[in-house]
Length: 376
Image (tube, rainbow, N blue to C red):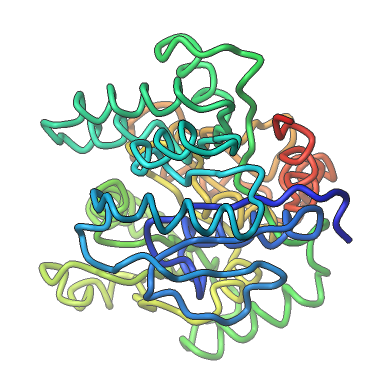
């Protein structure tokens, strides 16, 4: 039930419905739960599909063309929508429409908020993009012109306060979340595990290891190379170690040839799966050797939420403190991949994720915090 008469419009420059990947889920679920508290209109691209929007009013009015990022006529479209719907707050998802947000702030009485999913310019810097500095200055300007900023994790918020010279009172952390407010029942996990064993003909006494991600994204591609060439050979050399590593994700580059060369090396390439929750519930350990890329790693939040043990690099666990994960997550600080691989043997798989995890990451609590911090 909605708490007040505030009406939020979210400006999203790419399709999020249906939500399949982590970034899409981060937006779709945030507004799904926010719409239980305030009115929400999502203004996005025409290639969104109007289904399963759960209380959100979806307006797919933005062109799918790359020119949408600099189309000046969008200003008039959004100005009309905001007037017709009495929009009180405009949230920019990412800084890319900063120019448009600035114009709407000048010509309407709407409160402007930037919802940052990472420090976008630093993410591109880590990927070696020469133009990251240009984006850095644009990103800084966008946050400075806004009335308020939401950041995905505390390190990003602190970085922006220091380097973008933001007022700490005008920033807060609104993290990526999880749909359940408690761990799934062990019976559900047992059913999921058996489904995986049956589908891939895995022996019941084998450890099921999981890696998941969009596989043409450079940080994930680098992590996949580490898994295949440095970590998996260590596992294969451990006497009596029975395991299967399942790799889920779409857009696998052609150079991997569907991972055919690894089929006799305990590697199973599942590709894009319709229901990743089966794998999160049924696997034993989530492996996350990601070294680059900004923001919180959504797949790690989901894995922990489904009570899956996680072995991760420090970068891969940004925004997820061990104080709220108990012994469900082990962080490896070095690039010694042999040691990383052997950590699997020390992981506790029968423990339960603490309730504190859901206090922090449940979407319902995140939405309540966001509404509390909406500037009046």
